[in-house]
Image (tube, rainbow, N blue to C red; front, top):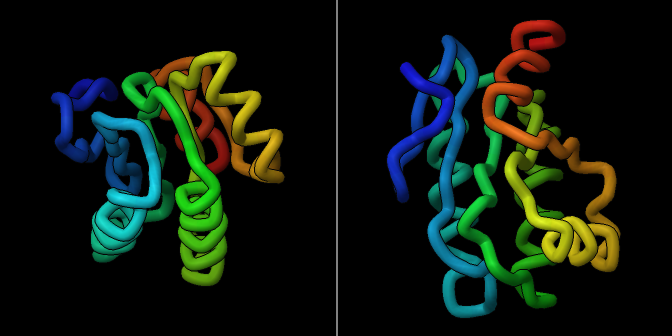
Amino acid sequence: MSPDPEPGTPAQAAAGLVIYRFESQLFFANAATFKNQVLDLAAGGVRWIVLDAEAVTGIDTTAAQTLHEVARALTDRKITFAISRTTATITGMLTHYGLEDIPLYDSNEEAARAFRTTG
């Protein structure tokens, strides 16, 4: 399967790797939905979940807290959480909110290569 999922659809790019494209800004009104969807994806042998953030146009404080919670919950399950295809604005927001420990990849292909190398 191609590492670029259809909009709004998770894709299993390789066994153990899920790339999840979120089609909106991350903010208080959808943060819980985002969290539930990502944690639901973490079942059944998944070792990495990559958020394809190409369509994410903003992150508010509630969403930043949710990203912290998701990253921590996945780490507790021994699952790597990473983000791909961010804009400079979103990268700046991640840094501002103290989320710079989340691995960032320029493309889904780069994330998939990293998964295959370290997965």
